Amino acid sequence: MNSLEPFYSATDQSVTIPISSLPVGLYYVTLQSEGRTYSGKFVKM
Image: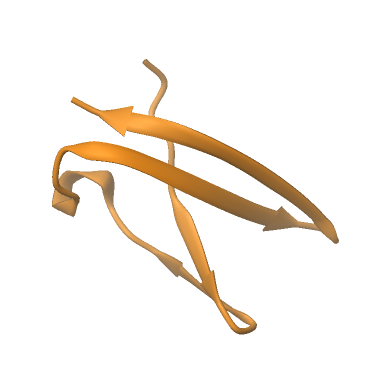
């Protein structure tokens, strides 16, 4: 599985949360870059 840096946007700020600090589970991620929005999900085992 590829490493993925999750970004959680709150209002107009983006917060980066290291995967090592997250509990096991399924996460939905939204990435905003250059005016485009990418959505996806990843599972931490």
